Amino acid sequence: MNEHFTGYNKARLEACPSRFFLACAILALSVALLMAAGLATSTAFKKEWQFAAEARV
Image 1 (spheres, rainbow, N blue to C red):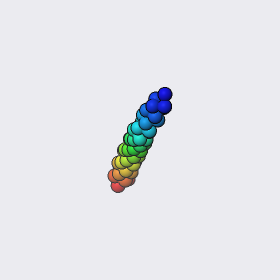
Image 2: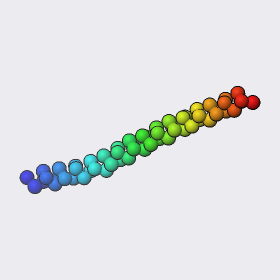
Image 3: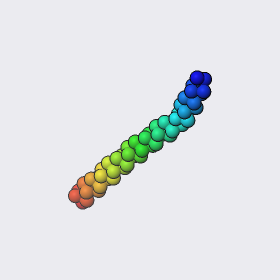
Image 4: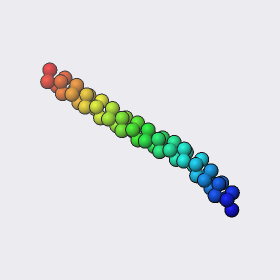
């Protein structure tokens, strides 16, 4: 009986790091997605400013 609980606790402890790793991976991917979106937006704004400046000349 006691062995069952030991195995369960061992399995639970082994599952923890993988969950932590999964959470970190999801967080990193979402941050990368936000950075990519921000970069694309800033690039679009820069091009818009460039066109506006060229139109003024």
